[in-house]
Length: 207
Image (tube, rainbow, N blue to C red; front, side):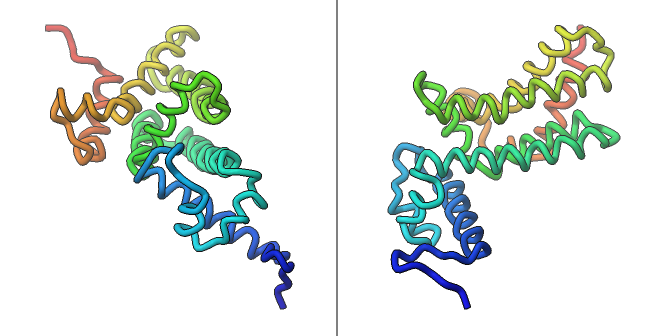
């Protein structure tokens, strides 16, 4: 029989894990609808079906919940990177993987952009440690192993360029749509991934 305290805190480890995952899923879902700062603990509770007190119990506060979400997403992505390194076309698979992650988490880019604009944001700092720094450690080695680049600095520059090509269309959504007429559906297609891969690997070619 599952025991619970008078305050509604489950002692069953499995139930605790289920509630944590529900809150993380709610946070991830709500980011597609509104900014991090506009999301309330009440909304997180309603979306997840978990008592609002559990946010503080499991994560200390809303920021702690979103830090845990960053950890979860980072761990998932790093796990994929290990598999990608063994693929026959690892750079193409890398592009596809990051595009898929951003497409499935449409509010993630806005979340990152908002927190970067706040120089005192702990979430912004946490994001840098969990995503860009890990990519900066992984991607240059992949590029050196699968392109003609063998210089460390050039590989680092190439890696940063590739990440910019992938991420900027999501961060600069309004400019992309209003100035260039490229909608969300277009950057979720295999054609878009192939375009980035082709441009990165072969460039435009000289006239």
